[in-house]
Amino acid sequence: MATRGMMLGGPYDVLGDLAREVERRGFDAAWVAETGPDSIIQATVALQATERIDVGTNITLAFPRSPTVTALSTWDLNTLSGERFVIGLGSQVRRIIEERFSSAFDQPAKRMAEYVQAMQAVWRMERGERVTFDGDIYQVLRPGLMGLGRAHDRPMPRVHVAAVGPLMTQAAATHADGILGHPFTSERYLTDDVLPRIERALSEAGRPREEFRVCQGVILCISDDRETAVREAKGQIAFYGTTPNYRPVFASNGDEWLTDELRRVFKETDRDYDALVAAVPDEVVHRYAIAGTSDEVRDRLHDIERHVDHLILGGAWYGVDGHRAAENLMAIMETFGPTG
Image 1 (cartoon, rainbow, N blue to C red):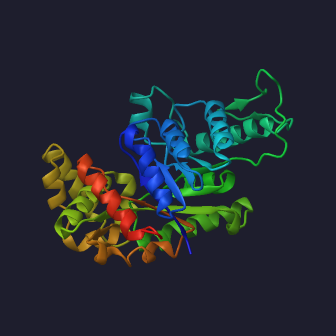
Image 2: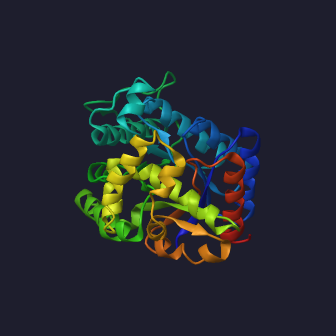
C-alpha cells in the first residue's frame, strides 16, 4: 500500500503547527511548495517542528539556483533532521524562469539531468569521494574550501524530480531517486501514459522499478457543502487546463476539446474565475479531482493510490481564500489521517 503525505502551506507562524498535526495524525510525510515563500525555508520550519516524518519540497525551483547551493542546503537539512529531508526539483515554465528569475531555461530536460548529477557530485565530495562533474551546462570541479568531507558513512540525500513529458521523465528515471507526478491527472492518464513512460525510461536506464519512488499528487477538495468542494475542484482543473502542456491529461479521457474551450474563456473574460468554473462540465470533475463531502471522497483515493508508491494529498489553491484552504486542509487530515 502506498504511503501518504500532506501538501502544506500558509503563513510561517502556523506552518510548524500544521506539520506537527500532520505527524500527529499518522501521515508519512509533509510537503511544501514554492508558489510564494521559499521552499527550503518552509521545509526547515516543518523539519524543526517534527521528529518522525519525512519533509519534502514539491517543488523547489531548480534553475534559478546553483546546483551546488541546492546540494549543500539539502545536505545540511538532512544533517539537522536525521536524514528526513527529500529535495524535490522542478523546472517550472520558461516565462517564469526567464522573466521572474532572470535564469536560463534552454534544454530543460538536459539541464535537469545535469543539475541532479552535479548535486550528487557535491554530496559524494562531502562523503570524501574524489569525484567531479563536468557537464555541458553545469560543472562541479572542486570541493569546498575545507577540501573533501569526512562523512564517509552518511547516506546520499534523496532527490526527486517533477516530470510531465517523456524527456523530463527520462531525466528523472535515469538520475533521480523518484518522480513527482503533477496533481492534475486522471487514473486513465496515469495507467495508460505516465506509468508506462516511467517503466520504459527505467528500463532504458537499466534501473529496477523497486529502486525508484513514484509519488503522485491529487486535487482533493472536501466540504460539508458539496457544491463548494466541486466548485473549488473545477477552478483548479480550469487553471491547469488552460495550459497546452496538460492537453494529454484531458485527451486520456476524450476531453481534449476542453483545453481550447478553457483557453478561449480565459482570454475572452480576462481570467474571470466564475466563467472558468462554469466552463468545466460537472461530469468531468470526478475524472481529474476528488471532490465532495468526507463520506463521498473517503474511498476515492484507492483509484490512484493502488498505482503509486506515495500519494501527496493537497487541495485546490487557485481562487480559494486562505480560510477555506485551511478548512479543506483540516478536512483532508481528519478524513484520511490514519489516527484522525
